[in-house]
Length: 224
Image 1: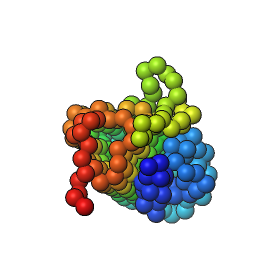
Image 2: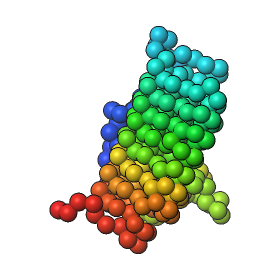
Image 3: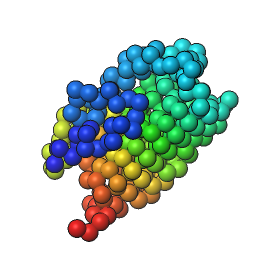
Image 4: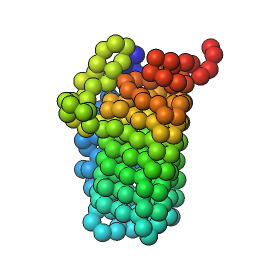
């Protein structure tokens, strides 16, 4: 089962400018600690005719659409054709993929959004990685710190994988749909092509190709 948590089985790695961030690691949360340094290295190498440097360590594709009211704090890369809407708050250590949408009052911190990710309405995404074409409904958030402040683990098959991280929100595979008002608890990993019902509280590993109705009611989306 742990093979399903490997980065290569969760994401289309060609669908992010941060592909090399995942080189040499197995589980995607291992990349979280390296996002800042990766942005600084990649940003300085981006072509100036395609990317504009704004302020300190913020690189924005010239084809991206950034609202005047949005706040961009570095290090950050906003890739081509991305849309950063009114009052979006990018706190730093953020990679926003091609054609991605970061919406009104959405806050990002230490994240990678693959291409065409949508977090368009009142979302908080921290210490997380969202795969290609994944979408978080209005008000859905990642909770990235446990209430007892202990290190985050990932629950899978009755066991707990140690991550060694105090801050780790969620990993969404490609084409994951998160319903409105959902909370993704620390250490949530959701496999590709899975749908999560609105107003859910999710923790641990949810297999790909599933429908999450409740924590004890996860069904296959497709019959074999």
